[in-house]
Length: 333
Image 1 (tube, one colour):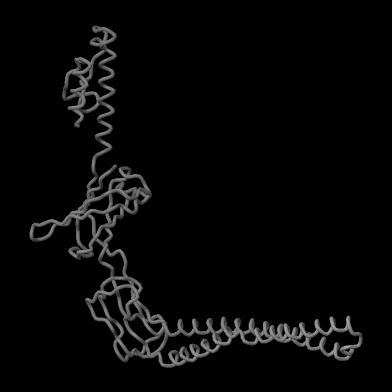
Image 2: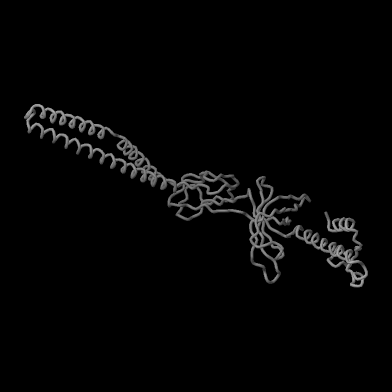
């Protein structure tokens, strides 16, 4: 509903006689009324006219708040790009990519000679299996528990026999049975300690294997993001050092839109405001993409009174590219 329509309906409902005019008090709806006019009409009609004017002010305010803001020009930029570096020193023995190839995060880009760390990893894998086998072997504990059980039973029978028949068995035989019980107890404790040490050895083997696998992964350069390879820097056989770039990858499935709007129209820090980005092409066909505002700068340039605005749009079809010039319509809530 426009301001004029809303005010007209309100006039008819309240029988308000305030005419429309160009030199209105609030810019579009009600004509400025002189004081002599107000004094000549009843108070009830004057109140109705004031109500009409207040209604116009509210409608006009709502219309102005709901207006869209157009920012032009804006520019499409890359949302993310990265140069993948080498992490270790050595010769490149394999290159798995080429310019223009799409890659997913984690895909192998190139491999540096990794024979030595590969052998070390296999060694730790074998040591880990040995440690796991020892940690899972409970035979010593079970044997020690059985020995303790048998020795304790023999001692108990000997003591019960001496109650019925003194000196049968003799005291020396009873002492010998006590010794066997003590030895069985020591054997059981030692078996449990050995089992704990075996478990710690397995933990150490696991740590060594994880470290070896991590070292091996450093020799294999992988894509940290999904995108398109735009430059392959390292070539087969080249010797690289840590930090030297291997390839450059850009992300084009989403693009960043950057522009400057008149300060004060959008609150600083506002996010998730819908925008429409329009890109005019040379074939007179325009491409429209929907997006969201992700950043509104709290700083306003004192020279031209503008503030920086960033938005993001979807480009999964790949029809747009960084560097294009466009216009952006910000749909204020």
